Each structure stands twice: as C-alpha cells, then as structure tokens.
Length: 316
Image (cartoon, rainbow, N blue to C red; front, side):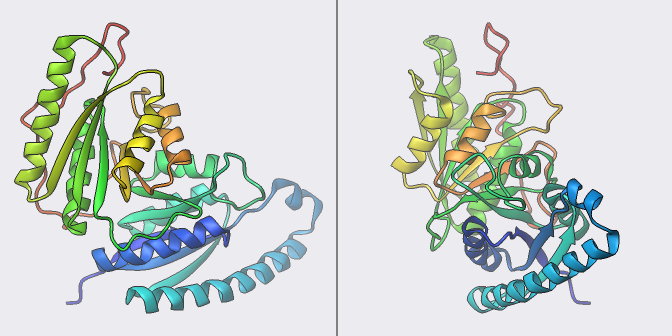
C-alpha cells in the first residue's frame, strides 16, 4: 500500500515576501520528501458584503480566483521543477489566518511556511503580516516558519540558532531543534542570555546549557553553546545580533498561545524576533507536534529543564 507523503503548506499572497517563502520551501520539501500545498486566501471585507448583492460579489470572487489560480499553477510547476516534488494549489475564501490554520489541520501538514514584511502594518488586504502572522504562529498546531522579504534562500539550513530560556517548555524546543538539525545535517548553536549577576544563577545556567549540549550530541547532532550577559539591549536584539554573528540560517523559538502566561521568549520578545530577524524563524507552541513517524527519538536533558523563577516571579 502506498504511504501518504508529508505536506508543507505555503501561504501565498503574491507579494515579494510570500514568493520568497515559496523559494525557501523548495529546500524544505526536498529534505523532508514533502509535497507543497500553495494556499491563497481571498479575504472578504465586511463592507463589500453589505454594499453588493451576493451574486455580484460571487462573480467578482470567482473571477479573481480564476486569475490567481493561473498564477499559482505557474508557481506550482516552478516549484515542482526546482524541488523535484509535487505542488498543488488551493484557493479559499475567508480570514487568511483562520483558513491557514484550518487547512494545516485538515491536511495534517508537516509545517507552515509564510512570508512577512519588514513593516508591522499591512499595506493592503491579504498580506500575511501583522496580526495574521502572529495568529498563525500562536495557534497553529504544527511548526511555523516565517521568512522576511529579501531573505536570501540558503543552500541548506546548516546552522540553527536555539535561544533557550529554560522554562518548562524548553524540552520541546530542544526536541524540534534535534529533529530539524538531524534532517538538515546542521550544527545547533545553543544560546542562553543571563539577566542577573547572581553567581548561583550563572552556574545553574551553565550546567543546563552543558546538559542540553550533551543531549543534542547524543542524538548525533553537532552542537556549540554560548552564555552571554544582557546589558542595555533587549533580549530579542541580542538574539538577532547573535544570529548574524554566527551566520545562522534558522532561529528556533518557543511561543505560547494567546491565553497562556507570557514568558521569556513570548509576547513582545517573540514578536520582535519574528518581525525583525533577517533569518528565517521557526516558531513552536507548546502543544505543537511534528507528524508522527518523522523522528524516532526525543531528548530529555536529565530533568534539568524546568521552570526557574527569579524574585520577580519571572522565568530566568
């Protein structure tokens, strides 16, 4: 019996950032032996529905869909040629982030790949930036890779930056790094940022970092660690600057859903990394899963990864 292939969902809006995201998805499709699903969502402004008769609006939507389908079909053929994988087109109507999440769930995709602009405000309807991007990142049940417009397509993701805050969810973040690192044959750079001068805290962080390194290496993935001290810069800026320093090709961060308690790499810090990084960012929520069967082993760094709170009741 023929087994089902993995699928990667690529959000398309025909802006530069989404076409760039498609280019990056070629490499991912090859590495994971996955088919590409190109999704274009036609967003319906509420005011249009009120001003136009349903049949008139339906004609407009159909005409637009046909035009976009022709363009997407051309992109799909291009993707199939470059990545030697199958690519299909889906055109849906609704709110972009809702349809992206629903489609990802229905198709049980391996991951979502989407582009993002260099600005935080959408220039016109349909751009997958701002609230659309963040809603997908927060709510998708699978990993989400966001790629900034103009980001150079890597030959392969050979250097992965893994900034760790050592909360209770760090284990899953390390797991995903091992999964991706193993598939890409990449070297993982573990980064921890110390925000206090407390000697005990510094020592504990160093022990935790070393423990993670050992666990990663046991899975046959190369690893290098670094412990740096925060001064006046934001954590996000330090992570982004470090990614440039080592010429990372992917940053893996852990996020949480809307109703969860905000921690070190969530909220404004996570958003700053996602929006400002010139490197692709892989975001994972605690409940996100990689498709069963993709990996055969996981890591548990000997119980050292647990929630550590400082005097302000914030994760260190």
